[in-house]
Image (cartoon, rainbow, N blue to C red; front, side, top):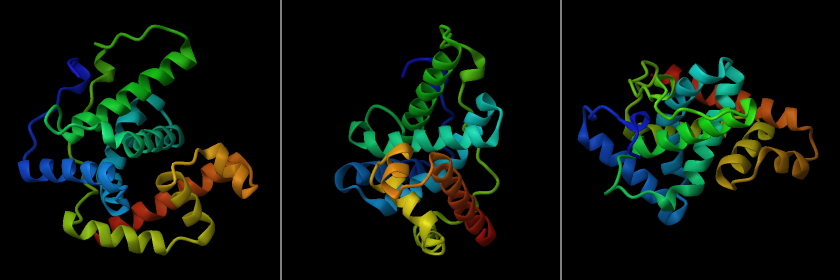
Length: 196
């Protein structure tokens, strides 16, 4: 984590930075779904905005953001709050996924110092819900989803099942899995914005 892409501004509120780190530690220690839901609500839109600069479409940015957050869930045990802030660690995961995707698509070497790979961690205006209320709001938003969408969210983020495996398990097309997940996350985000 010594390149320009992972440089970050000092958090305005060190207590918030500690809270983000605590959430990752909780996910690592006990697979705490509420902590992960709070992480996802806070960092998901930021990672998506970062990915959108690369992907160019909302759909691709959403997919890359989801993959990044899945890696946060899976790799939480690797997070060391003594070595990096939570935001730096999460955006490093996102950046690496982005670079991997670039290499897969274009079969080119990627310059890690490329200014387009630098993470912008500016606050997003649509996240105004008090952090202490987010877990309850996310649970309500998840509970309000139609069953077919809620199942896919739970399988994808809490059981760590890939989109193709979900399609096989539910015996539905892969495109249906992706569209239901996209709809579900949009509804959940919309619900949180409505409260804000």
